[in-house]
Amino acid sequence: MTGNPLSRRDVMRGAVMLGVGAATGGFTIAGATPAMAAVAAPTIASCATWGARPPSSSLSVISTSPDKILVHHTAGANSTDYSQAHAYAVARSIQNTHMDDNGWSDTGQHFTVSRGGYVMEGRHNSLARLQAGSGMVVGAHCPGQNDKAIGIENEGLYTSATPPAALYNRLVQLCAYICDQYNINATKIYGHRDYLATACPGDVLYAKLPQLRSDVAALLAGGSTPPPTFSTIIDNTTTGRFTASANWLTSSYSTQRYGADYRYANPEAISDPAYYKANIPADGLYKIDVWYPGIAGYNTATPYIVLAKDGNQTVVVNQTTGGGAWRTLGNFTLTAGDKDVVGVSRWSSASGYVIADAVRITAV
Ligand SMILES: [Zn+2]
Image (cartoon, rainbow, N blue to C red; front, top):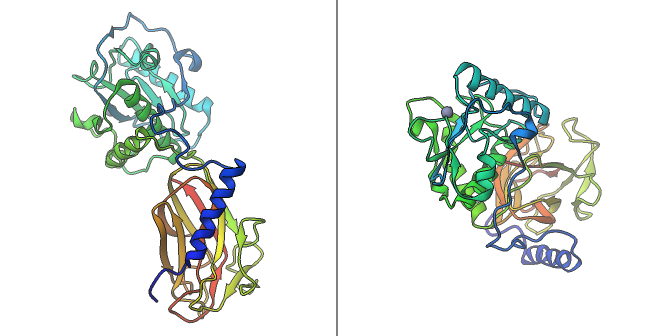
């Protein structure tokens, strides 16, 4: 098979739908945010909000602004309690350790991000200086950098585990806000180990720093970030979210199906895709998984088409194996809006039914 399995008409249909939405104000259009708008501040719980103790001695606030950000991990447990109450308890625990065990005046770092995505002020005066966009409280998170770098502690141990999306996405937002307020370039985000012989912030989080710099730069350039918890499943029976022509028949033959049934069609060199529609909350990166019953005799080369920001991207899937489970097509940059996101094409080079069952879209 050569060529694009979606016809020009299909592509135009998507464009027209976007236009209707814009006219009725039904949903957000990508790029509606002015490029020069300041980065939205994440909600940051102040020391008073999470119940900090007062510092044991006066803190040094200096007029020079920080020139970089240092990323840390707490090296504590990878808790599965993602609540605000837990986040605040982590902040209090860190402060107790830093004051009572380390003998410091106050929490060492400037800010803390929990695994559930809550952001908290660390050392007193960190938040006020950040909001002012000038000066800083001298921290205690990295010798030699305490009067130059904003220190961010991320809850957890990331030597081999991956930070939860909620934490990572909030870290992106926090770093972008800090960079915006202090006029720090996104390239000036470092790991603790860049300035001290330490494993911090763990191999996995450290390896994500190039991605972090690029995501922060994108946000500073006027992009938005998807809510960290966004995830949606669209089945072939989901009302108003799945469309297919009458050529797509319905079956419940395979027990590997998702939900009550699935749709199938003969492969043919025509443009007759089944479409999955989703309300994408913001421009950003999303993981797309598909579910189909995998049976010998189904199609070995089914084209899934993702209507991504940079155009249609086709991923060919062998639907005779790997069925009855989520199978990842990959990560794709999607634009905001309520629209068709994934199509299953009949334009396959192989024989056997092509299957349209369920699709899952998750912000990453
Ligand atoms: Zn560290």
